Amino acid sequence: MTTAQTQELDVQPSPLALLLLGREADPSSERGVECPGDLPSPSDPDLVARARAAKEKLGDKVFVLGHHYQRDEVIQFADVTGDSFKLARDAAARPEAEYIVFCGVHFMAESADILTSGEQKVVLPDLAAGCSMADMATAEQVAECWDVLTEAGIAEQVVPVSYMNSSADIKAFTGRHGGTICTSSNAERALDWAFEQGEKVLFLPDQHLGRNTAVRDMGMSLEDCVLYNPHKPNGGLTTEELRAAKMILWRGHCSVHGRFSLDSVNDVRERIPGVNVLVHPECRHEVVAAADYVGSTEYIIKALEAAPAGSKWAIGTELNLVRRLANRFAAEDKEIVFLDKTVCFCSTMNRIDLPHLVWALESLAEGNLVNRIEVDQETEAFAKLALERMLALP
Image (cartoon, rainbow, N blue to C red; front, side):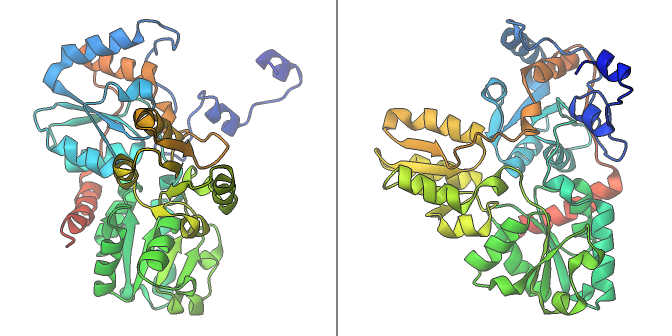
């Protein structure tokens, strides 16, 4: 239906529809969706040359970070690739770079700003590149949860552990309340540390990583875990349930990893005899329990590097990475397929496309700072405290 037709029928597009179309801003969000400039056309045949020219003009002043889930058209311009924490640390190790262009999502750029110097400026090519998981835990919701724990008389026993995939506000909350950050690689170490500090853990914002680490890696039972739903009074839990729990899991998940199902695992085993199922720990518990191998993005890459020629693998993680690995190892006769039959990219990560990258690089080359991600000093201080606790883990 055209705009003229909707006006004829006196039908007004909803704010959500306009937001999804990129023609409106969400007033309740810290991010907008409009690009403050004219993007080059996606059909411009000179985009690659323009990106290369702008990057060469900037020289050592710019350092481009590319997350593993990025598009190939963007990842080709990355100076380093990796997961979110590795990239933030790589940026901090390049103090001579005035501009850090983060081809990832919002919370990753925030982490880079927290860990880099005050002179460095972090740029996100599209401010609407968020993370659905990180957005499932707001500062207001988590503060209300802490009030619930206080009223239940257990807040002093609870240590917050927040996944790297969280906003700066949530990292700061974690730092204020004596907690630590974790990655998918060191979640078990972080939980071991937390249980040395207190009797219970509030795990934010990914329920699946928290549950899988507690049950699969640390030998807890599913009954030791309760799910706190921020959209229900008291999180949908009784005081008795909160007092009995060891792991209080936030009701959040990754929109990509959460789609994999036990049926996906059973189906691929039937289709490809002898296949190895390798999944990310952000997947559901029943998927992780049925897999042959479970690990972080870096673990997945290293496992495939070490895999023998002729082996077959079904990978449960983001499609851009799976496709890139399949192409990389095809010459070694390693068969690598996506675990689910349905194509699933990280939609917000894919907002960082070549036109946005070209626009950002050309703007910086012309001396115009655009789309800067800047965390306020108080939030940064407490978030950094939580990150430093993670860095100090044995």
